[in-house]
Length: 89
Image 1 (cartoon, rainbow, N blue to C red):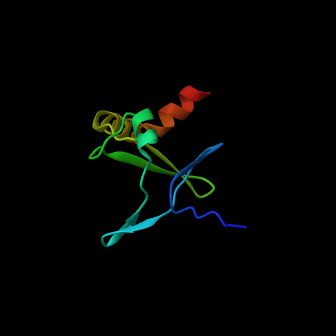
Image 2: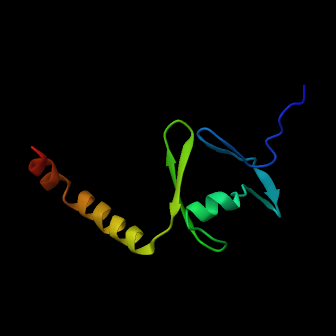
């Protein structure tokens, strides 16, 4: 029985199986062209990586306007935490 090698990206019922590979002095994963096409991504695009619970990550296209808006919101929540707590009641 031949053992499956996850060296190549393969689609499965919940997504893709990707193998971490050495790329120069770093390591990374290669995204399949079908996935890139569906997500409207291309070489040179920047992704925002968010670490989530249970050893998972979320990748999304990086939007500098969204990043700036989130920084403003975080600063507001930090500076006016008591006000937001009172309003939430």
